[in-house]
Length: 421
Ligand code: DP6
Image 1: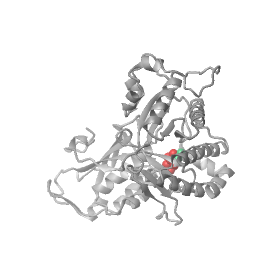
Image 2: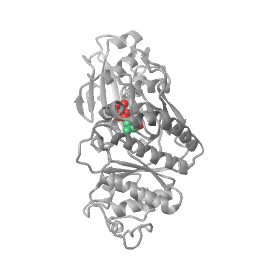
Image 3: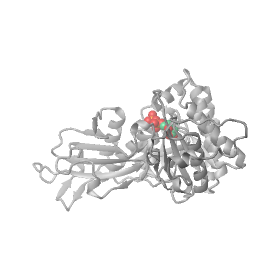
Image 4: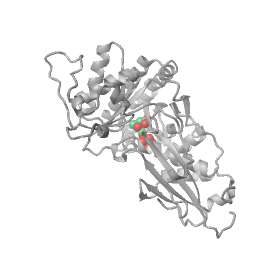
């Protein structure tokens, strides 16, 4: 260190996206290293709409490692945080910040303590994959702070030890987590299949479904599945390897029909595997099921899929529309079936890219109330509306991978004392 007595604070801030799996990761062959029983593939979501921002700081004045999540101090004692911190620290290099006269030698990193502040730009309680973006952001920002020279794939293998799905958030676009074979997990890492510009027709709509039920965490759920489900063994051995190849092909060729069929089938099989667990795990609820039948009915009436749906370990639906036109028609259908309460501002009901509302000709609640029933509803079958079953929708698209934020105003820690702003 330059001068021990100096109370400098050196920090970096990064932004990392979340991701949604279209071929699911479910089940570990090694719980500590977080090694999966099958490959998985995901789409990275636009960080402008869903992301984690993390500031990491180092200073000789810090007496211990500390972390704040959405402004509240949390413990760093979990094995998963500790694995990520240990792995990153062991790869740290010399750092020199000429502008501020700070020099940190490689060997000093073992003694120096860190302050970490992390913030999600979407409600954590919404049950969206906040841990994926969070752990990926932690690893990415620490690697930048400590001048870790490893490439993004190697970093993904570290993020994987924080939360499996986090390894796929180290890249934008379309990402594959290769399960690997090595016992030490070094070959279990993420690779980018295509960047976000490769298939930029796709539009993604997330339905944040109101839920009262406390869900089984992914970690606990998949442990119980591995212990009790025979269907999981069949899925991991026979089904997923073939599906991965087909999905890679569909992404490469921008073949939406195959992409949608594979995405829906894999989501449904993941939830079937949850039901095959003892005791059974229910992540989807009645609203989730209703969304599936709305999309299935519409896709069938069109003859080719317009929208794919997928659900993680919770009731929220992630719908991927083939293009903007399909997304507009989807939003009209969703708002027809799940209108907001009359006193809700449409602006608070549709988050993210609100421009789809204009395309759909929906300027206010009156327009939503005037939406006609979708034509695929057969005459005589009453179309039940479900006000209040969806908390809100987020309109987004495939997005970029992690980036450093150089604007000092975006830092979450105070540059003077390294405490949350
Ligand atoms: C259903 O990555 O949250 O979202 O590795 O135990 O932290 P841990 O689990 P996590 O599991 C995600 C499961 C999933 C499917 C997926 O993202 O592939």
